[in-house]
Length: 348
Image 1: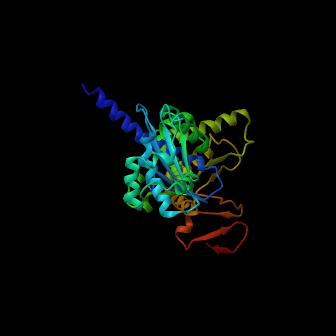
Image 2: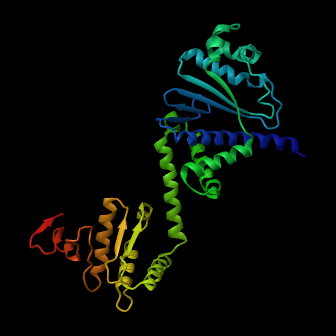
Image 3: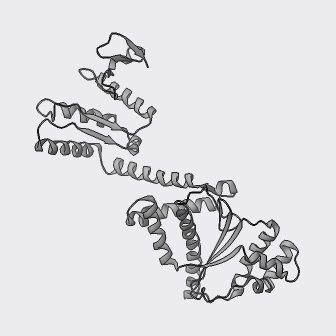
């Protein structure tokens, strides 16, 4: 039986997971602060946070281990040596610890740095013999031990932070966003170059936005087929029609995520069915609002007109100005705007 080895392996894996959870937690908590932070995954410590000051954080998780002050001598010794080399007042050293008795463990740098392993590290790193009490007392002003919650409580806290800051449901936070964020942090951590392990708030939020884009794209493309989407939109429009006839102005709004799909066919089908004889829903013009890039909108217009070239009649589109109409004829001429009621034309 390997029950002892299995428990050790489980604790080691949980220790790595704990590190990534703590990294997520600290980054997510910084999102609401009005500061320009840079985060280095696996920098000087497990997580380095550059803002108005430099915050170096190391995470220790001991679920089944009885800890004594000597357990942390290696971590504290390296922090002390880094401080001694830098001697900067704007660096903060934080040691986050989970252990059942962490709050009771008296971690005194003055005592711990005198232990055998800590002494060897000090000798090797900064050639320091003996105990420099004044120096260690000064270091202690910038050093902090922070007891943390156990693994499941920490995981729940991170789930709630994702839910709060990213504005998604709790199940989505736990089942979708958290694993992807953890993978993102893991991929950063294993990069050999520090510059590629460094991100800022904008890059982190950009990654979150990419998750949202991927989710909506995969969902609408893989689950909601165009025919189902079209039927759903038209059925909703007919429902409104039944409540009152021909008095509604219909406005369909497509947010920025929709530009990842090819919407031309959908727009043409909606327009065709909207005004089809015998099924015309209203006498008013159908308005489609798209929060798309200018380039995307231009391509959609061109593709709609290409679709309509093979059909009877012209595609008439109002681009937000009632005097302007786009027709397929622009593809036989130089691009232009045709102004209704005016003789002149304008080059685009």
